Structure formats: C-alpha cells, structure tokens
Image (cartoon, rainbow, N blue to C red; front, side, top):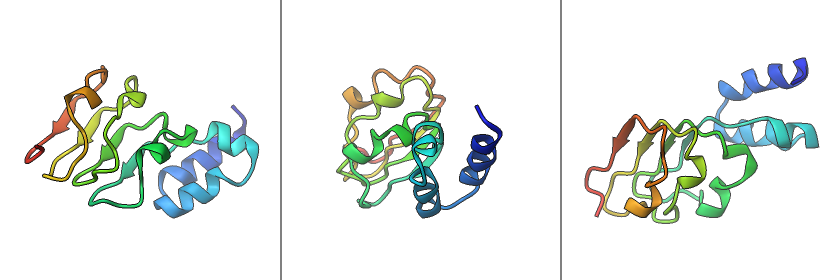
Length: 113
C-alpha cells in the first residue's frame, strides 16, 4: 500500500463519519483501499443494510446498531467485527444476522427482541 493511502487511512481513523465518507470517495484508489473500522448506526439513523455492505465498511471492527431496524445482518464482517452493540427493542439484528461472526469478543444484545 502506498504512503499516500497509509496517511489518508490514519486521517480517516480519527475523523467523523461525514469526513470519512468524503475521504473514501475522493478517488478510485481511496474507494478501494480506505476502510472505516468503527461505525455508529444507532437509533434508526439513515444507515441501512445496503450502506454497511459497501466496500469501505468491509473491515469493521466496532459497530453500534442500537435500535436500528434497517440493519438485520452483519455477517459480511465475519472476519473483522470484534465489538457489536445490537441492543434495543427496535434493533433489526437477530441470531441469524450474527451467527457467522468468528472474531466477535464483545456483544451487547440487551432489550433486543
């Protein structure tokens, strides 16, 4: 990976989501190589299943989908996701949506029905 990508990846790691997405969209190289490792998609935000399955999110390590009914499966991150908050009565995550997560260390499913 180039020095440019490493530098921009470090900036992405410490930026807010809006800036992260803009940086990932700057050019084709950024789109393919930059990753977002932590995502807060809680409380029925505008982040949907289709969005989190985009290339920039395929190395997620931490994900918060508290009360987000638009996301129901996070198995796409089976080799990277370590921390998942799928709590809340309106959370769309079910057992089937997490059954392939082999790296998961921390799971919060309180009040998940």
